[in-house]
Image 1: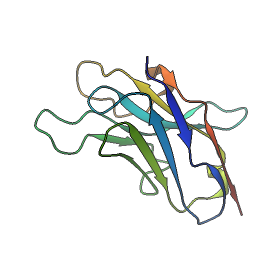
Image 2: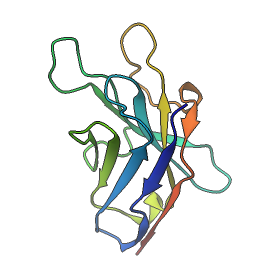
Image 3: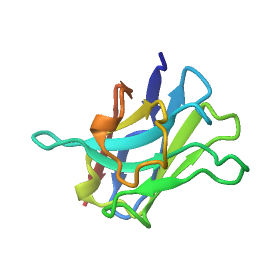
Image 4: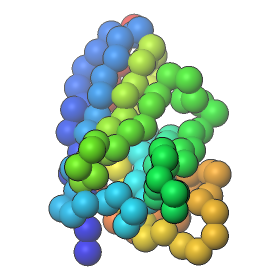
Length: 133
């Protein structure tokens, strides 16, 4: 069973940037899909970005982004394969939330295009991001 831990949250002014890190208890490359979510009180958990397995012939793994963050947020995996990052640029107060990383075992077929919480079975504890205007 994989264990996940987020870090890098904090307070930032609007227009600023943060990079969140998701450290895993095992190497995730080619073993797990990893995704980032966020949640504010009273709302459902929102899928932001996901990184999937590297293809059979190498090359970069497929990625998925929610429309709300595409172009501002970037998901990546470190060379060692046991950490995943979420680079967040041009932050605004609406980005204030608790951010979670999550993992799931890949399923047959192409990776999903949408980042959906019910697809993921392993979760970190979350890290708070606060953006002030």
